[in-house]
Image (cartoon, rainbow over all chains, first blue to last red):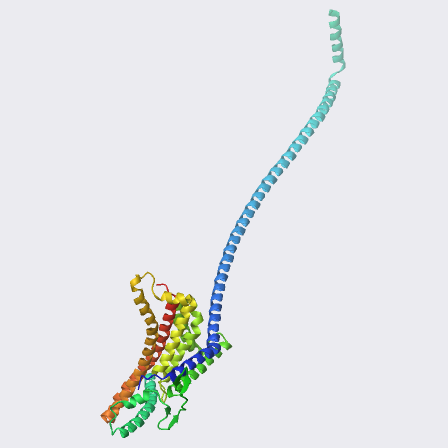
Length: 162
Length: 301
């Protein structure tokens, strides 16, 4: 008989299955399922961590880029400022130098003028003296007796005529 | 090459089956005056018995227990052939799962054997239990894992030489179906309460006059579902074996060895098919039980 009710086999099967369920649950399914869960969790966790690390690194990169850009900008600004300052300083020094030069020139001119006046004054005195001396000499050479007589006579004549 | 090897090894196992069949057939021929065509020897092979045959090495007589009086009924608690096969499949399953579980104790990365077990465990968890029951299914996982592997091991165990398929005994599948029945009802009752569960069996929004009919249909349905499970598994498992024995029997009916290559070839084909069926039936029994439990805990018609 193929299909024959046998309650004994049903009972044995139920007992066997129940026992297997209890034993397997404790010794096999729990550790296996727990290991699978742990592994899945760890995979999920590490993936999340990797994602977070990626985001963090991207953020850092962006920040770096921003920092770099701002540093570059700042450097450019500094260079510009320095250049302006240098320009200003140069302009200032040129002006100062030319002013100095002008001052020196003026001073020199003044000195020259003073020297000239002095020289002119000295020359005046010298010329007068030389003229007197020359006149004296000419006079002494030309005033002989006859001339003196004539001169005196001329004078006396003028007096008589009055 | 691989196919050839497989063929060889299966031939060896088939060979021992054939030896058994030969021995049986001789016995049958002797008792029935050379008539091997009545097929009673096939039934003798696939049906339950009180002896483990290891022809030609002899046989083991199993102890008779009982009849024991249980609830006023005399029950024969003898350890029959199929009970022994059941236990052996169970022991094999225990050993296999212990090996797999131990591999996880060493590291989270499974070993070679544990990887194979893991594929099946994940299959039961992610493709059978969780889709039909949702997150609540996690509580039932040990039951479904045990169910799937127990049926799988029992089915496959029957394909070994000298072994017989415990799931080819309707009492074994009936026991599994009874357990499934209780799991389904208890899951539903735990979810909705005793009254709520039985009230929820009948779809709401029905005209009043069909309610009694629906109630009867639904309550009958509670019993037909496990009954179908029981018969399906039993019939599938026993059919393949009967076909194999019949094919081998052809040799003796025709009375010539010339038919043997054809018989053995076809028997080999059925044997390989049986491997497939053994796996598929374990899957079907498990997924249907999971679906029924899912329906019991999600009564939203």
